[in-house]
Amino acid sequence: MYRRQELQEQLQNLGVRPEDTLLVHSSMKAIGAVEGGADTVLDVLMDYFEKDGLLVLPTHTWDQINLPGYVYDPVSTKSCVGILTELFRKRPGVYRSLHPSHSVAAYGKDAEEFVSGEEESHSPCARGGCWGKLYDRKAKVLFLGCPLTKNTFLHGVEEWNNIPDRLTEQEAEFSVKLPDGSFKTVFVKKHSNSRYPDISKFYDKMEPAFLAKGIAREGRFGDARCVLADAVGMADLTSAYLQKNPDLFLGDAPVPEEWYLDGGSR
Figure (cartoon, rainbow, N blue to C red):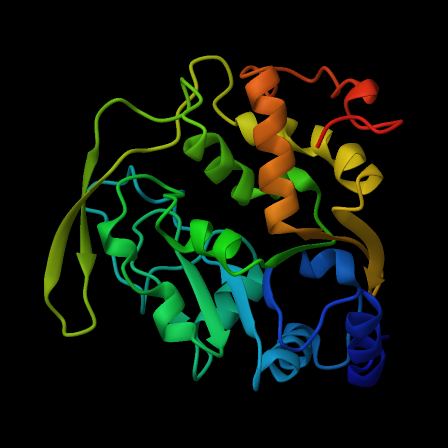
């Protein structure tokens, strides 16, 4: 069973700095047995970034957006992307964004400012929203026990490159509950692909290129295999590859090795 001190040391060994902005995709099951359970994991992460850094977890609600009468309430609407995200969003000092389908929650330096303005986004991962801010802040993205198929950031990269057939043509209408108790009607496009409803299942094909280029590194946290990746590097390399082949993620064909081995383009 892992204890707090062991997890703190593993976090440091991953190469994360206390002043970093870190987005975490997580699987509590992959971490294994921890003294104190998920709360201890959150304690380790939050304590590490509390003073100088920014900790961000996705708190998505896309599983609910097609339900009749759906209203997004950042206080009560449950996250659909894991127990750590659901517990995190309820913690004191954590701020949750107002995006009706792809919200995030943040803790630490500039947390409230980071999540602000998401109710003005018109797509799931708008360049001016939280996912684009990760690029601007030179953030790191930690895949903690989960594969790069969970890489929501790459949805953003595809959006920013205007890859066709990634968003619905029409904006859907949603109601968002604001902090003052009033409601705001927002209009947001949904992720959509005519061939693959879950196109992100092919995002992990980028992992070998990220590792080979030094954009990502491997490590461990508890029992979980982790990949720590640089947001700017991921976006720039993926953008370059999408310019070569806009259909890069339409199917499971691997990224050609000559693109990233022996001095291949970045």
